[in-house]
Image 1: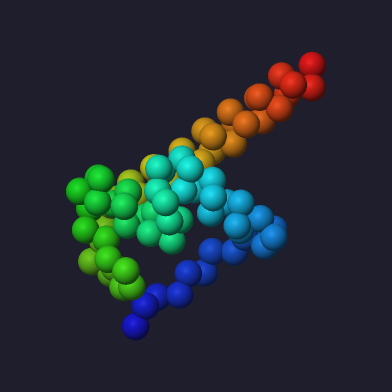
Image 2: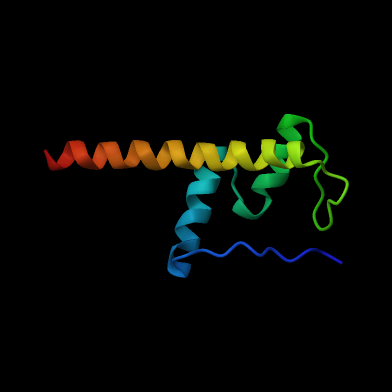
Length: 86
């Protein structure tokens, strides 16, 4: 049985844009499989569904790469927006 994702987006209306950003920063065409693609790049065996054998270190490498890239892109977008306002 697949484990249910319990992450909650604070602004549910933003989910689609967050998925698009995730796909953009990772170069993925499908945000639903982004984690699988990143794990493959990093040499980590991640499967759809249950991944109980995955260490916290491995999970952190996958999530950190995605989240870190998203934060960098958001900062870049904010800086560009501030430059336009000046």
